[in-house]
Amino acid sequence: MKLVIAIVQDKDSNRLSNALIKDGFRATKLASTGGFLKAGNTTFMIGIEDERVSDVMQVIRSNCKVRDQLVTPVTPMGGTTDSYIPFPVEVQVGGAAVFVVPVERFEHY
Image (tube, rainbow, N blue to C red; front, side, top):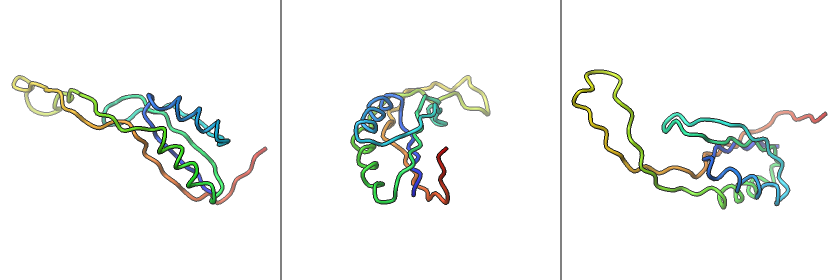
């Protein structure tokens, strides 16, 4: 058995949740916040049999898309801010960060 932990952008959360349900995967959703953009994410925790990991990975891959977004960097922490003029930069956001970890024991009551 494996535990799949998928961290996805909030924009992809509902689409992924619906796709997981449609394909018969049970998941727990947790609200989370990314450290770089300080934006909302959703973390899915999915307990799955070893032989179905590739199936759930395909559902995640199909429903979580990378997109470009303009962000303004935060003010630097040190030094003076008098000469600091933030310019928006384009970064890639979205997609999914997925961890697959072995489960030593699972019980359901």
